[in-house]
Length: 508
Image (cartoon, rainbow, N blue to C red; front, side, top):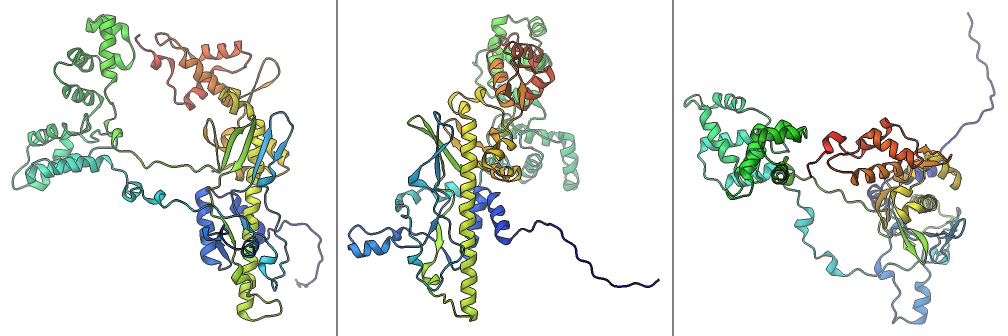
């Protein structure tokens, strides 16, 4: 068989992403923290980029000529300068002229001309008060104290022998984040026996050290189970505490009935009257079933909103957060060094860096415009939520916003991921405003978020002695014209971490 080479000409279409488009997409999907890091990396790697400093603000005492020169500076792009209004009485957004997005940067720069002749500067932000940085550095940057740290600190203040110290550390190693022992006393004892072969360790010694550690803060630590945890806390209360003996009786002998909310059996077996049992339960519910949670707290996650929404003169105003990214611009001094006809290595390097800086600034501008445009459409669609709360939330999917802003759904998905909106009702991720729908008897649609809010409201208003079942909630929603199945109610209830009706039963 003979192979013969040949040439073929084919015509086809393919999608090619330019470096500029790739950069724009990358910036679009970054969160606020990642965007700040990306901008800082660009500032560190590109000498043509710089931040807008406070000393760029024109001096009020300078001469008129200096004022004119100071007003001629390079384009400053910020993630904060765009804003839009949505008027409830109109059909579309009303762009605020004083905060419009700056004009697009031209593709071809006459690099052999002065940069000041091309762009005009925006006023730099006012200088910050030095007192803002006077807060305690250690308080802001020190790691949170864990339960183990808290117990170790108390152990160091407790006079114990070296032998008891070793036992105490073994017991502390077996404590989980709730404050409970994850191993039995026998298992801990057997693990320590091999280390004390010369002087065998007795089980009584481990129990004695454990009894001492059970007096540590928070009350209830080093318990083997919930029953022991509650009893430890009851034993640390003053002896004259009302209903203390009855609470010990209920926890010691009838904790299973208490867990099942079987109050009829509990009243009969404990021989308490209903008003007495109510007082006993009030004392028991004041105890902490997870003592470790009061100490072992994770570092809080602070959310910086990307978009601010507020109502001004009857209008919902949408604007970008002015603090999410530093103001950057092209360095005019370096840009003025570029010569058009010079092809030296230094001039080529400066020209390339200038082009990359221009792309980066345009990508930031594109990100701001897209984010603001999407946020404006979301506010337009969800005005009922902003005015009346979750029960007025309307169904919304990505394709609705994509059609409104004439973009692809994937772009809307990138914009709404890890981007947050600050509203008078709190801070929400943009994806929070998107939800599926359920049909109503009138042929309309109801948002699943609104249905969850209704379920939560019905449960909050229920009678504690006779809580509403999922079937009853579905029937009550049906009376309001909302068609929802019992299993759907159960799914929404579980998503809100609300227990079923038998666990919500209370003795009132």
